[in-house]
Length: 374
Ligand SMILES: *Cc1c(COP(=O)(O)O)cnc(C)c1O
Image (tube, rainbow, N blue to C red; front, side):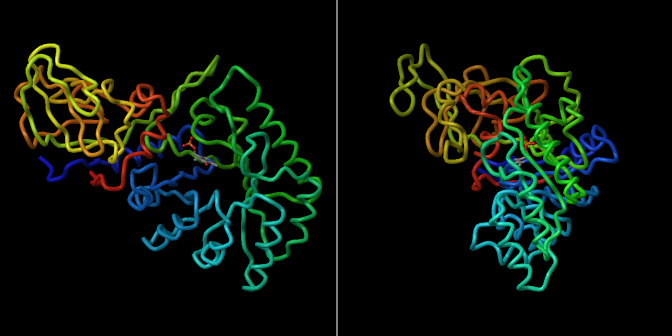
């Protein structure tokens, strides 16, 4: 028994094994840069980064400067790529903490050059090009980009990157089109004398489904580091990246009681007991990250068996039907996400039931849920 209302157990060994599996898949010539943004998809960025650094990761990627600063403060010494920031109030810290920015526009490129010049520093950066995602990244021509880079005397273009919008969709050509445009831009830049040492395009899905043409010198897996690969659509090549979830999420039973036929359970009386039932009230709710949409539809694992959620998920509490496991008592733990014996519930299954995506389920696990490392 754990003295917590709700907690996650993160397996350091599994994080390490997933990283190794990805390295095996892409081979020694492709640098693997694990993505530890959003507190490592809630697995805990500091601990996860320590594991990855110990296993030889030379690069980590975060979303914003604060995340990079937190890793530096914790003693992480790998290169750290900041993928979605360069807001004006973060620029000093970016440079002071030796973080490597991704630049998304030629105006920001000039600004970074000015800041680097002020500090009399030579600053490496990565440039993101928008090849069709329609989000971050410059849409300038190779000629314009080359001109801006050649004019930036305090900068060093270390990486050229892009991001796919529909990597898992094998029913349309969007990803192929993006790869082609990326290659064309890289070729045109090279012809203009701009040859960044690192080219990178791939997150988890193009790694897992072997879109080798998109691996180039570096890949950026997030989901797979945590043990997940989303299913692809259409005729995708076989997925054989052997990764497994590293996180188990549990909650403690706060109360157990018997209710008569006809009793209504929870807000809105969404569930009515069809016969006498025994219920357990769990000490976790949507404020902990259990999707409200699991009301009356989700399940937990109790003593190796599925126990259905009944009634609405509340802010701090969730009710489950334990009639089939009458032995349950206050203080017992159930598994919200993970496995017991051969019964398992993963973030993908939860996402399906809740009408969301597995990323959102993981990132939704609230900071108040205690994290322990095993
Ligand atoms: C989040 C992110 C990734 C990692 O994506 P996964 O699907 O989790 O592997 C890679 N690149 C960029 C730009 C990202 O924002």
